[in-house]
Amino acid sequence: MTSCILKQRYYVLTPLSVLLGVLVLIATLLLAFTSYQRSIAKTVGSYEQMLVSIDATLLQEMALRNQNQLAVLEASLDKEAIARGRSAVNPSWAIAHQFKRDAHFLYFYNARTQRISSYPDRPLPADYHPQQRPWYRALASDSEELIWFGPYPDFGSDKQSLTLIKRVLDEQGLLGLLMVDMSFESLQHALQRAMGNKPVAIYLTNRDSGQLVVGHNMALLPAEGTAIPAEITGCSASLHGVHLKVPLENIGWDLNLYLPPAVFNDSLWETLLMVVLPALALLTTWLCSLLFLIRIFRQEQTLVEETLSGIRRSGGAMIPTEQPVWFVHDSLGEIDQVRTSLLQKQDALLCDPLTSIMNRRAFEQDRAEFEQSDTPYWLVLFDVDNFKRVNDCWGHSVGDAVLCRVATIMVRTLGDRRVYRIGGDEFAALLPWGGAEVEQRLTHLLARVRSLQWREFKSSITLSAGGARYPDETKELFELADECLYRSKHSGRDCWHLAPLGSGS
Image 1 (cartoon, helix red, strand yellow):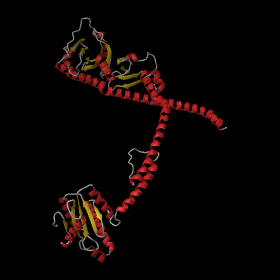
Image 2: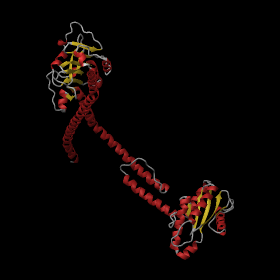
Image 3: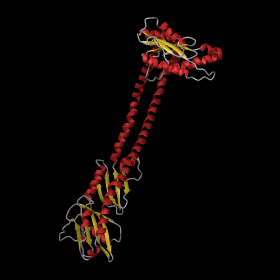
């Protein structure tokens, strides 16, 4: 009966799994479409910034250079001499010609004599007629603004030219046309350098007529008459591409950029690969993660067992672990609390409850470790001078406060792992230093204790000290240090004596 129920459950779980798979697929496709839309917006935004940069740096700089050049030429014109039929070329033209380093010409067409002056000098053939040149139509304009004219074929060649024209007037009216050539090829090369190897079309058009001025990668443009939707969406970008336009200031041109569908189709495939492949690999990754989790759980179980064994073996030592744990964090926390409690109890056995420094049991243990390792050290014994009088006159609570403050000064001067309280007002220190440093520290310690101020009484508290060095002494070390301590007391207290030196300070 149970086996039959399980099989019926599989019949229910199978379509649910298929439905879940379909939902995951739909969610994946929606995520891919959203990501693709963001990718399109990011791509279009980057190209828009590129167009603005080209306008602000490259094209505006080239146009400004031509305008400045034309302004210098106009300022240098001797209109009266030109009206009399003389050439407009003067020494300033050579300077103005240096504004641009490409091969170009400066022209002045005298509308009254119908003669052309040029720099550098350009001999014109007999069949050259200004009335037949495209720029001649600028004479009919009544605008006082600069006129960009072109592109148009240069006379006698297949090269294209762009010309910046300024109508020059005098008191009698139109004197002529001042013209500066702008190399069509240099402008085209500038656009080409700006785009590099990017598979996009960039071109300039006349704002009024829509006529093409110059362009790069024009073969990428769609067939004439093909409409490009104004709204940028994933479908329109993949089918028709994207057209961007930036009007150029002070020039009657528009800077255009066409991004063909191939730019966005590549992004679409990249998006699908980035979204769909991880979805297909999700199940495998999940299974591997499940196996790893099982392994981690077993390892952490072993860590707990080893930690408990370590506490039992070493009496409170915790097995160090640097990596974080996932499953047994609470268990390790409880184990650590047990270990901490055990260590606190051990510390309580080695700690003096009044002064919180180490007691006589810790003194004996540390002294034994020094001698087992054959480490030289000084054993120094201390007594608080006239301590019984403090207890008798001001009470045991004041005496306890004296002991605590004296212990604090001793710890700060000699170190917290080197000072012990071994009796009522008796202290000891184990100092693994040289004789000179021990003398300096003892002198400093006694001075600090002597300088303490007390609220309960006006007199000073002092220390007497005596010490001996291991393993230099042949007699019992503790007894010899105690003898030195009594020498300090008999010498008037508030001093110290060390056995090797045989004198006090």
